[in-house]
Image (cartoon, rainbow, N blue to C red; front, side, top):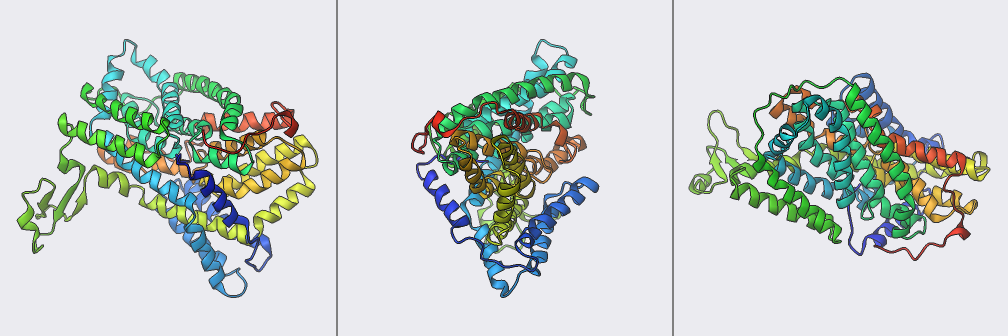
Length: 518
């Protein structure tokens, strides 16, 4: 999900795991432990109806759905409702949610600065300057975008941030040139999933290693063969799809691009370099934001007023005295008072998704405290996981099921990790193997379901693109599901590995080092 590579991360993850399961089930429901899954179940049903049946990809609508789901669950809670309410607050204050929120806000501001600073027109200029036909260019764009998104996500460790950055930059440039919007969105999500799975500084990588008593370096090395296999299949699939699927509404007649906007490759490079050097994602993106601001001002790509602006109401008592400031103006007959600019737009676009994330994590907390997760784990362990291969197959499918309900992938990983450890240890399965099964599915499926956090992170940026470039910039989260090729292939690779025993390691085969950061 996101990059958190400070030295305290491992301890933070362990503390959150303790909070999630230390006290055991302590909420009682009419209908037993299974009833504690009602809030998330109602939300998934709402999301399927809204996104699947009605074709509405509105994040705020999903927020209402989760609120309704939590209210419905309240009427099944036994005794004093304050315990149920406290569980909501406990879930909403978990670090896993806060980490995602901070990464999104910073990434949103950075991506908006790049977009408004002409990076899109710079990419258009590159595409128009390549010595290939437009048909060839459109055929290879999805595959190239997948690779570039995968490299960025692996470097900075945040798949959600990668989805935001690419949707606001690469996506409009390629769609304006005529690329298929659905295929391009799928390629971006695939690249984000690749990096979330493989990056040593990704939250999902850290959680999967810590919860399965494996060292992070060994986990990354051991999962490389699976990730690259899925990526190679996805790359070929994007080449085939790019060559055979119909193109989008763009016709390549966009006004000539401007190469000056390519200066923001330096801004992206600063973020990647800083992140790879082991700095926190907030620090890395902050340096990228500062670099982008300087580039915009020095090269005249965007004014300071374009990056942050204040429009005061006409009757404001003191504002008129400060209109000499380049960021302040007074509202007129056709101008509404308020705050605007790239920084504002980049951050505010995530507000509905932030609220949704907090509510989903709260729903997961209720399910944990109500005992539904423990009941599912006990059932699967006693009835399904009766051999090594059946156990691993159950782990793959179980993580998929959890991700269908808990759409923030790190939160889903924390919820299911005790079961993965319990089953794996019962069959003497190595910690590396358990960590890989856990992370691959949470990373992959976190970018596939229409209500998944990774999908919504990218989708949340599209309404603003519609206003700027046209209606072809919107892609329904439902329509993109089949085209997140890397996510599907990564899930398939581990399902096949579980069924066949490919790559299976037992505890004596290789000892994990002490859990540590690399």
